[in-house]
Image 1 (cartoon, rainbow, N blue to C red):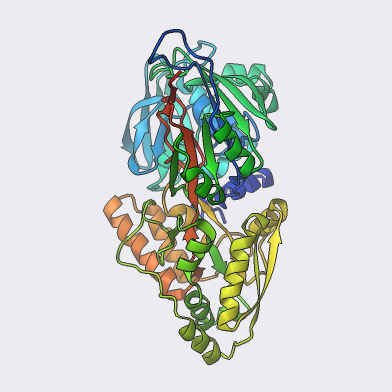
Image 2: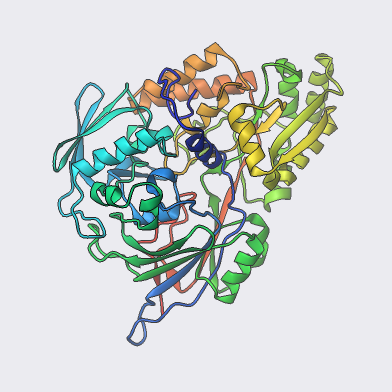
Length: 518
């Protein structure tokens, strides 16, 4: 049922929350465009002075300033704070509002809040605010409720102590808690909550909101009393771009200082610009193309194996991403995602084997439908061409995001469905595993897979869990449920005058340490 916890946790959630989660989880890559270098007001002083303003261009927009109803947006991460935070490449949670924590009972953790943490209006952050934020999120079924449904309760023991009880053993508890952004109870209630709060947001993060528009962007100012020290730059202006080429031009012209989440199409042009620092790496998303095994041609494992053998991932990477993408290595976790093992390798590209398997199964000429977002039309068409060479007869269905989300959530009749995965905030294979038998109309119905998957969700010993993940990954490989392609690269850039950028966190860009030389 839920992509964020064991199927037995039968918590209902709203369609709105579900759609928001699924859009993100599929890398609803609105990340097709982002902005570039821009001027800032110079701080007083001579050589070595820093600017008081940094301009950021991005395509990763925030739909609302209600942090309970957003998932992994840059504004959310920089304006609000959580008990703990999990960063890419670091399996250990980092204390934020919580200074320390300990397991104090069966499925029970006690968190001690950091002293001196305040909201932007100067009021202290208390355990009551933490418990209120959780209760409100779950009661209203906001977007993050789907991440936190494994948590049974969060309650205030006293002003600085929070007790968290999970429904069962949960190895991803800390990652889930990093999605609980804390709001001030008094201000939430005074503003009428929800939309009212979003019009006048107050958090406890390093930046305060000066102005915000869902269409154009936001202006932020440093919170001088932030518990971890005031941000390095006084003002941040974020501008949303709907076109990647426009973003690249803005970067090169100096209209923006930082471009977050460009596309590979802009990489060759920006690569030769000596005024820019260009970053190309795994950005927290991957293509997850799933084969429907409940009916149709792919119910036969030989046909699934034929499709996998027909995919020349090297050609896809070179032709579609200028060689920047990372091949999926026969398993859903990538090297940067917790759960990866070097004991599994992807099946080799072998066109003759693909043809032979298809013929053996009596499926040469099988008509199949490949469905995904119009954003990925090139990828869908390239895969269609490779499958055609093996003897399939594919039809491409490239949908607008709203139509794709309907099929993502309600189920699709397509033989190959682009599901996509975004790991931001978790960076654990659980996010991808949860998609295999996802929804009321899953592409895969397999009790053995369900058992293997459930075992990875209740094992809290890290080493033992990695072994169970490897077993589950090998099973997916053996059953040929996934059509392996590649992980989408994240392209971002900054003017050389800017330092402190961290492009490793997927959809979000931390801003606290950004500095621009005046």
